[in-house]
Length: 214
Image (tube, rainbow, N blue to C red):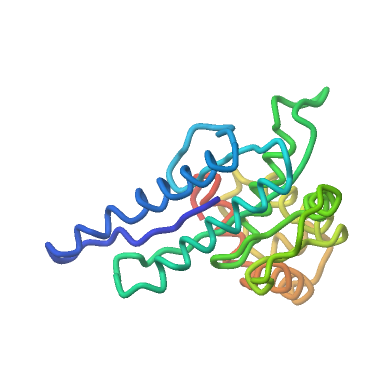
């Protein structure tokens, strides 16, 4: 899960803004523990990473977090000016070429970056596993999206192209399109359909997550 909170302070009464991201994290931690999740990495900044033994538990946890945060956002407390994104993926705990859960966590992180504002985004495998575990479709489908395998392939190409040039501070959407052998218009259309954002905004988001200049 990724939380972006408003921590701007211009008046004394706005110090309450500082508490909101912390309260949101506590809400998320409580839900993760309720569904028997385990934290796979130390919590840093706005990101929380957890693993679950059953896919259905992960999805139910994500939907509960979403409902709770949306309830807070619908209240009249202006301090709750946050945006959250939740991405879910599945994979082997350990592979021959990676560390513990590395590949699954990398995919989950990418899916989280792709997700729309306040959305839960599932990989196609998570959806398939949930159906096999007897899971039911949530009623709030407009807040949950399931990726198709072809979309996941496109996402992998996008992230690989960006991450292979993270040290290049001059990287732009135009250069990204060239590296992908795409026209700028095709790149914009592809990124817009996947993320709802422009290619330039998406590029900045990925670079910011990697803590490099955008």
